[in-house]
Each structure stands twice: as structure tokens, then as C-alpha cells.
Length: 208
Length: 212
Image 1 (cartoon, rainbow over the protein chains, first blue to last red):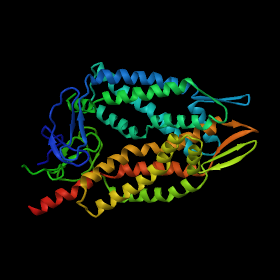
Image 2: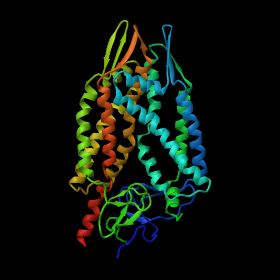
Image 3: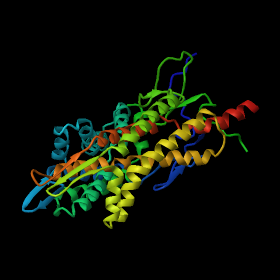
């Protein structure tokens, strides 16, 4: 006889880091479950997960537009003035023959953070409005594969280092996009903390 | 005390993506997670050999990334060629030592440590070591967390090169090390992703089963 997955709903989880089987006990709001053997985080139960994640992610999307529409920083040097947006910086790198590096910057600082936000909104908005699709899990898989490659917080530190390096050459002006990026990282961190993935996996497991 | 059981010992596969447990059917073909449709395996396929290959490539490129120039600054009075390390020294001498330390760690120490740490982890897993399991698990977590910060220098040159283009009296250009350095970051990130931390713990439960 063939056993068709999903099998009987045993309340067990396997640790994703050490494979130990353990009980998937329900968590109080704000609680975190850790693996009994290796201490890896197994699950969290952030309060109001859906609403808060949506609110933060929508805010982040607005900040993202500001962070990309305006110049990050400007430089004034002996009467000359230059300013740069993120996309202009990437395009410049492309044009001087550093295409692979330009692509890497574009993907990690611009494209993947955007995709991640849009996909999370695309998954959570219908959920908030009460539509449940069993395909949500397969789609959310994409979000998870994009996630490790978004590096906006490293980019922010990069801007700070550039700032100090340029301080000698002339006067540096921080643009609107610099502050928008700083705020964006804060909001994305809050969104990440508010988000409970198990919400999606649960929805996916329920019969449509 | 009840003996500890892993999903593998119980004959269950846990999805790498969503954590769903599933029982493999008798006819073993390519399996997919019943919940999120991700390919389902007991352990990441060819984890050890793929990680070795990525690490070898990263180690090879680490040399040009650090020895070749990453940034060329030209002004009316000077022509300065910087490697990653000379950029760090510049910041230090300039009195910006907190920043010098940050750049030194992100660009020099983190990539090297990442390559060495993953090589150690992969070798110990291949030798089925049962020592310092917890420490090795923590080391993997650290490597995963800290790796992304080595992109720092790539972003710095992107901004400087775009901003300092005053034809005639001040320009900044990228050197060939930027390419090698970017490749090191990408390769080590993939290496951390292909390594399966469950392999660190497997020798423990395997020997328990053997003792039964």
C-alpha cells in the first residue's frame, strides 16, 4: 500500500539544523520555540503577525520608492557638483565594463529587496482579505530563495564608509534617498520580526 | 530518558524550505514536498562535494581579490592605486580607526574566516567527526549570519566610482580586484547554502543506531 503525503497530522517538527524530532507545541503570543538539542529557532509566534507585517511591508514599499527615486548622496568639489542615485551608480558601473559587479549590486541592493517586498504583499494581502489559495506555499518558496540575497543593510554601511572616504575631497551632501534607505532598513527589520511563516504553511495545509 | 530520534531515523523527510514532514513512498523517484512543492531530500544532495568545489573556487579568487588593485584614484596632483588592505590602512592612518576596523573585518577577515570555517566544517563532516558538535553547529550559524557583510567594499566602490567623475581633476576607477572580490562573496554565500548543517549531527545518531 502506498502512503500518500501529507501523512497523519502528528504534532511533530524536525529541527531544520539537526533533524531532531520534537513536539510542535502551540506557542503563546511572543514566545519562541528552540530546538532541544542544538538551540536553533524552530518557531516564533509574533503577536498580530498578519496585520503588523502588512503595515510594515507597505511602509517599506513607500520608503523603497523614495530610496530609489532620489539621490543617495551628492559631492561638491571645487565648484563642481555631482549627485548619484542607486540606479545611476549601477548603470555607471555597467558602462565602464564592470558588468558582473554591476549586476551583483543591482540584484542585491535593488532588485531582490523589491521582489521580496512585492511577493510578501502579494501573499499577505489576499490572506488579509480572506482569500485562501493552496498554491500560496509554492509561491512563498520563491520569497525564501530570494531572501538571503537582499543586502540593503550592508549597502547602508557602504554609504557610510563612502561618506567618510569622500569627506576629504569636498563637501558631501546626504540625499533624501540616504535617509529613506536608513528608515527602510529599520522598517524591514520590524517586518521580519513581525512575520510568522507558519501562518502561510498552515493556510497552505488547509483544504481549499 | 527516551532515546532521541531524528526525522531520518523515523523514516521521515523534512522539507528544507517549509519544514513539512513527509513519508517517502516505496517507489522512490524525485519527490516533492506535499505542502510547498520544493524538491524533497533526506539531506541536501551532493552537499559535501558541491561545498568543496565552491570553496576551492572562492579560495583561489581570494588571492587576486586581495592582491590586485580594487580602486584607482586620480587627481591633479596624485595617482593612487589601492588594494583592499591599503584602503584599510588609509582609513586607519587618517584617524578613522573604527571604520578601518569595520572594513578590515568585512573585507579581509570575514571572507577568509568563512572559507576556513566552511572547509573545517565540511572536512569534519566528511570524516564523520563526533567531536565538538555543538560548537560546530554554532560556527555554521555564525558563518551564515556574518557572510553577507563582506559585500561592503563592492558597494563602496560602486558609490565612489559613480560620484567622483570630475573629468580632468578627480576621478575614481575600479580595479580588477572588484570582480574577483564580488565572485568570492557570491561563491562563499552559495557554499554556505549548499552545506547541510544536519550532516554535523548525523554521526551522533548513526552510532546510537549501530549500538542497538
